[in-house]
Length: 203
View 1 (spheres, rainbow, N blue to C red):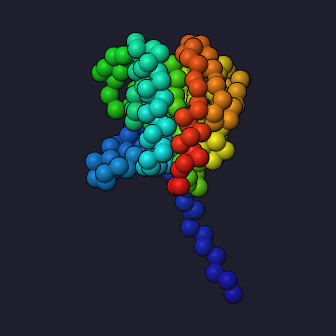
View 2 (cartoon, rainbow, N blue to C red):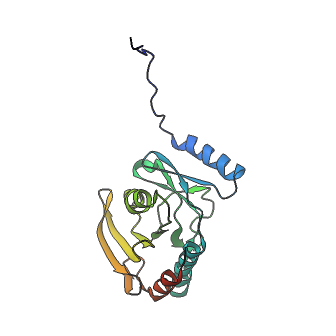
View 3 (cartoon, rainbow, N blue to C red):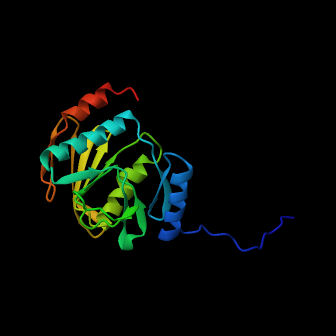
């Protein structure tokens, strides 16, 4: 005879933003390099960048500084994203005017952000996180431009025109080609350097 367990079944606990922020703060303090994110109600871990990931991020930082010195790409800044600001994301880069985040705290409002950047990592969560969840989250937050540097496909994708929780325009070009970052960014990027690095990378 099979025993029947009539106890109430447990349910997955949904993290509230304040609860998540406390958890993320403890994790960052107790484990060096551990950064947590909350996207689509799911708890995730921000991948530790490798050498190529860091090089590609800093390449964009340099490009923006050269062309738009009144702006800065913040690396490792936490943002409140998604509808009603329930999500918490840490973009690889966040473009905003110099001084925009002074006094913002650990998790900043997305208002005034011009662009976010993600560089894919070689882990099992990359497809869902960087190609699906984060574009949706950034679009819901109303961030005008989202730039994805995809190391797997060796492509760069520019998402723009956020509306109804999605980016309504996407332009993808292979590494080595020139791509335009649309308004309000208005920067032309020559991605030849990304192709050189990706070709040489042994990771």
